[in-house]
Image (cartoon, rainbow, N blue to C red; front, side, top):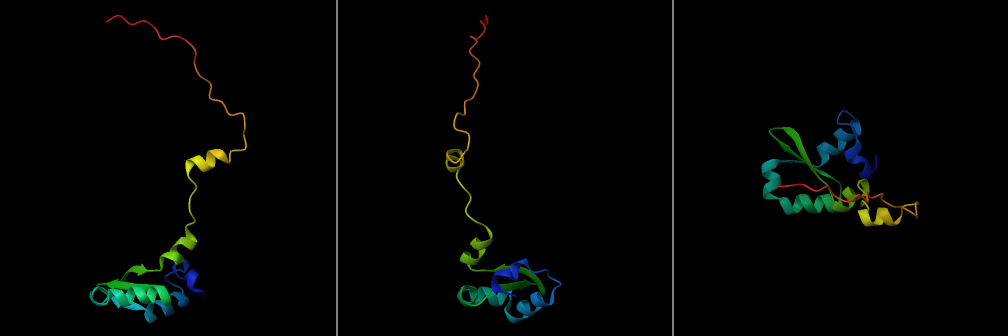
Length: 101
């Protein structure tokens, strides 16, 4: 299994179990060695942090995370790419009614 597919793997799969046991940190150890956890996530593969013996979170490199979540377009870009060139919003041309106060 490729590194980029780690977080997509189902927890029951054997590939997932292999990665989890190789780079698993207890929460207290992760706090004490945070720079090492981050360095391993950047250079090796995602790091699993456990709390009370159960998997809690995964630390993954930001570049790896962004591969799965491409940048969303801004509204201005979407409107500029709109295939309709003569787009007009119909407007009501009636005059407002008179209200006595």
